[in-house]
Image 1 (tube, rainbow, N blue to C red):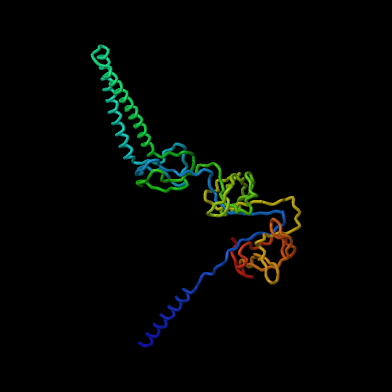
Image 2: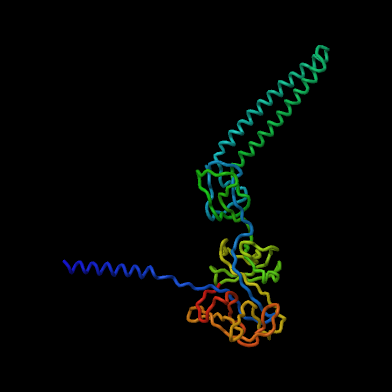
Length: 360
């Protein structure tokens, strides 16, 4: 009996220690770093930025009235034609208002007819001298008022007819349903998006450009586009929109590029890499240059952090350099670096020689 108790105690102790060790396991943090490839002064400067593909015309479909959806012929990926009925509401309130407007129109028509008969009778009496001028004028005014009320009632019927039509949702353009946000029997309000229609014929990439290179981006500029999911294919695109103001949320300048050789394989929402060539290809490729913020200084002199791949692990290596003049593109490098090497461009104060990093 004593042996059994000791065995159970040792087993529980082993489980407890094992759980404690598991709790102490902490996921290793790998510092992200921004980097840039070393190039020549005024030479080829290739920069790649991430963006998202989308059709050039995206329409959020919604009713212009509120009610319960009684018909919903909308499915993901469905191709629709312009003017096709996609959904409709029960329209209870609108139909009641339309019926009330018809009742008001009939009442106004009856009042107008009565006023007209009264005017004809008073006119006949006035022409015979059996009625006064004031009675005749009053009858004319009453008929005019009845006519205006009748016209107003007709406009009211037309308006309520339009309200009933607002309970029907038609496809405004030819396109494909890209998102479905409602279901049949759901109560929706006016303006609430119930689906998204991709109606454009062209494919655009939206992305943000930092202020350091935004002045090098112009409309009609040709760029290269690749997609993570289409790794074996490359596309050409043209810059179509360049924002003059920075986006406060991303601190970048929003731009749009349109793919000039689109494919059905490109879908909205795909991650894209857009490559810009900001280089001056007529420059003399003799002087290496690096950004000023990539150069640090310690007791041994100036240095940069090289980004190197060691057996599948990305690490930074402290590299002493000799710098020359400061140009508009950064420091000239006299020794210590070669063209094509990658260097860290931010957070030098927090990096350590040999530290594992993750490229950002």
